[in-house]
Amino acid sequence: MHPTSSVALDDFAAAAPHDSSPHDARLWRFLLRHGSGAMAYSSLQPGALHFVHEQLGYLAYIPVRHPLFAPRGMHVVIGDPVAAKADFAALLDAYAAANDAAVTVFLDIGRDFADVVSARGYPVNEFGVNWNIELAGFDAELRGKHYSHLRRWRNKARSEGVEVQEGRLGELDGAELRELNREWLSRKGGKDLAGLVRPLILYDEEGVRYFWARRQGRLLALAVFDPMYRDGRVIGYLHNASRAIKEAPNGTNDAIVLQAINQFKAEGREVLSLGLSPLALKSGEAYPHNRLVARGFDFIYRRCSFIYPCQGNFFHKEKYCAQQQPSFIAGIPTLKLYHLLGILRALGTL
Image: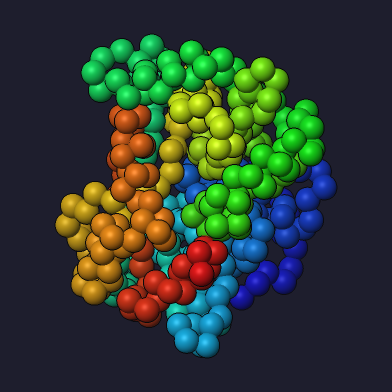
């Protein structure tokens, strides 16, 4: 199911990094043309494998094998296919025909791909909401009652002397950057997550933007923004990763995001994605689905903050007054409750 022959790259591939391997170049060919989804750039993350169709596009997945919940293998596919929406069905059929895993779980997919998967008879459950800020309409002055939390967080950071700037990671002291990452991870279980959150890479990456905050010269926080592409141009960014030391004043991360929003808006970008709030805002299942999985998600959202602070994530992102888009999860040939353990394994939480 992996590609075995090279392709003739089109003009889009010319924008790929010059040191890309042939495999990377194939991914960039489709990413630069069809990578407008928030999770598209995450398809390049370490540990991800790829099903590539030479004419249509590709799927990125994390392979999982476990003696209890994935004894015959599981693929956890990350986000929508990197392909034209018109080709989703053909790409899914090609993947299903070549699939060498007993189960495939499609994680954090949008309505267009969910329509295709459901039409093939596979169960599709709601998975949460994604948040998109339309930059042209965002009020940089944060006026009005609905922005009151953001104003308070931004003003708190300013009053504490927090200063934000953009640059390349290569401009930072390596030891300082590694210490920021180590200190943050030590409070988050000691390891980075994968899949839904692309792991932080401690060197400059193609197209990725970096903003950080300092106070009196000390590095307080870092935020990473992944590019979103359409027809060879950057249309926006995903706020993918954040790091902050424990002593960072409240509002430091929001001060970084707000400055990034203003910068991207000034450049004429279309959108900033705040990413997924998993298992949040259940509005009723839109497709034939597994009811036990739906109940399991609801229980995790309400009672399992030790796994992931779902409610806190939703509360914070809601204050940006972004547009909400439903996210879905689907399974081939089916989606069972115990598959959740396989998903948690793939994401690095087990």
